[in-house]
Image (tube, rainbow, N blue to C red; front, side, top):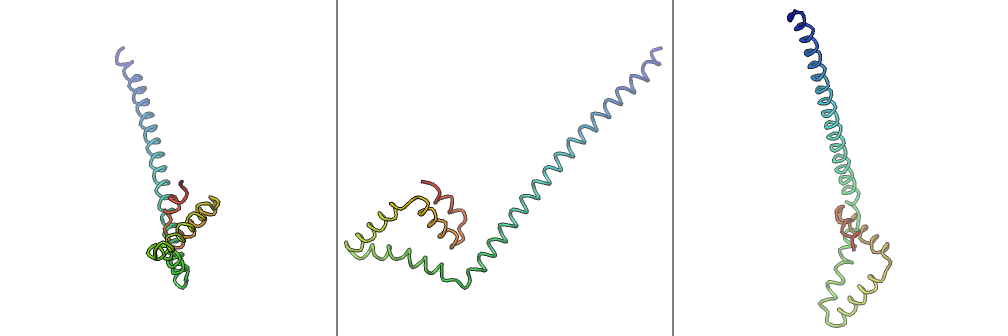
Length: 128
């Protein structure tokens, strides 16, 4: 009589264990697919960023804007060494810039960042 019960009970346990194993395989497959999708998105984003930077560098090869900005930023530096009259001009100029609207200040920062391909600097210019 006990042997008659062991067969069906054994079948139920085996069936239950097979079901749990399949559930775990399914969860593992889902986790793997999710990780692969996230990795693909990260690779795509990195590739897009690299391509954008390459295009920007290629486009600025024949441009004077970097030189213009370098000269423009050098003027206050040079005037700072020209005595009181130079320092007064620099101080008044920066005071005038500080009085400009925030959107204008931010735009100047973005222009300089884009010109020198310093994308992370835009975070700096956005903070007060």
